[in-house]
Picture 1 (tube, one colour):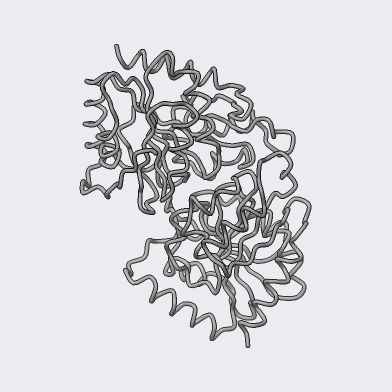
Picture 2 (tube, chains in turn cyan, yellow):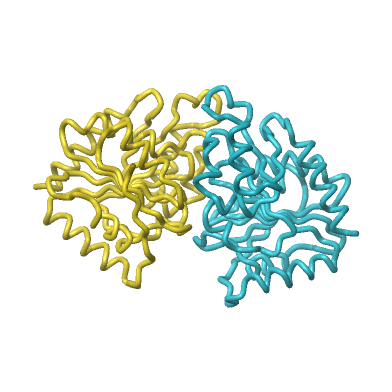
Length: 221
Length: 221
């Protein structure tokens, strides 16, 4: 069983202000929040499981899973990693904003927690428009989606500090040029870090885990 | 070069009424409108190219491509099929509604046109909520996304009359159980027709083309 939280739509129009306030609260408590986004089926949950299992002996991690109405992913994370995992029911909503994120965080045991990962709704459009209050935005682009996605979903790639390119094991079966993809990502955000991973085999997840450890360390300073 | 249309957000709150009126207009003109939806990178454009090339000698087809800001897909369709193809710029919007669709159709040569295919924004959440005025909704689920998507994006599968399961050629590399997937789709919509296709090899596209021919024929009666 995992906690299931019904999320209500924000009454604040000023989401950016609200997000900045949430980020400041989290800074005060030494809690790092990562907002993880992707298309449906890009491998967010599998990537998280592999990464959390590399982190959980070093730092305390919790996960908030945004899902339209199932709790499949939160249960999976809890069973596979043992870390606290709650489900945020969005009731069909296409994104999370800062107030919804705050409602979720109110249900997480934040004392002593170093890292909270928010698995956002599977959607490359709407979630990019709303600052959740996270320290960083990260996204997963999976190889079968194609290397042209930064051209087609520009805002998503512009707002992400980290892009994981997942399912690299099936690269031979798709016409995916990783160098071209990196170039398209750079056009949207020259500072974005790109890490190729394969959540299924675990390849690259050490690098993602190291990036997170370094981020959390810096945030707590 | 393809036509690029800037789409403005609807001022009508009553989208359902507006959609019904558009559908009725199209009925009067003998034009069948299909609303095609999917996740980013599921293969909408490649599927359309193969299908239109099977149809274009039998009926007159036009395509409207909704895209956030590129015209890559509209150009591709025009070059690969020769049929009229226009781009609807959604300016970052996550879906199309009936009024936006009407604005697009005003730029298509509808006289003598039998079938217009609207390639909606790549998104499994928001487009499902808005009736575009299409006769039918269809969607493409690609194998790499996983067979559990009907559980996670319930509304999308509920509103679709036809589900194409694409990229069947990579089935061996993904843990995708097509029978389980069909069962999940049936839970959302017992009447949905499911056609497995592989847009890359053309497998299954004859069936999709036949379905469309039959639909258009019935609509014109």
